[in-house]
Length: 284
Image (cartoon, rainbow, N blue to C red; front, side):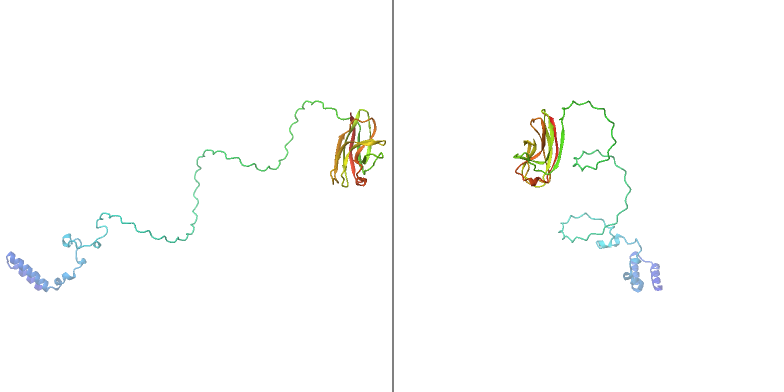
């Protein structure tokens, strides 16, 4: 360092012309570079840490020597947007993923205010009638209404003696040679010249019969006469067979009346039969 100082001082103290002074400076610097190890190694050991911030300018940088990676992204201006590239091929559809687990229910939100009532809709079609409900209890009797006007007088009913008949058994023929036989014992009824007979009698057979039965009148001295008849269907038994009828004008006197059957019927079939009903004398 003493040598360097003396050299510089000698240069400074020696009067020189400008050109000579320049040559002397260059020679001095060359001497320093050659003899001072620190100065000699400066070109090879200077790093960014040895350079003061803000001292390197554009003039100190070689044109076109910096690259994009030497700058931060925000330092370089963005160029114009390039043209849209062609659409790439659609990739294959990947397999469906498994369903995710259900999330937990969220808390119920507060109830909103009721909206305005909408217009009434049209009535729907009437549905089918439902089953009748159980009968309710009877209500209290209403007040008795006023009596209505009397109706017209009806026709007079039949008058005369009424004789009932109720007997078991049958097959009582008389007089001898008569076409009919009595079913059950006949009863006696007295008629005037202005009367005739009305009868309503039921007969029950204990066995199957196939015969004509009827309402009859007669006496012990005249044949039995029918004034109403019915054909009993085959197999008709164990139930009542009903007959009713009105006789033609009859002679006055005592008559035997009852139910009769034509004689071909076997009497044993009628032995357990029953005859019940009534006869009445009515005006002609």
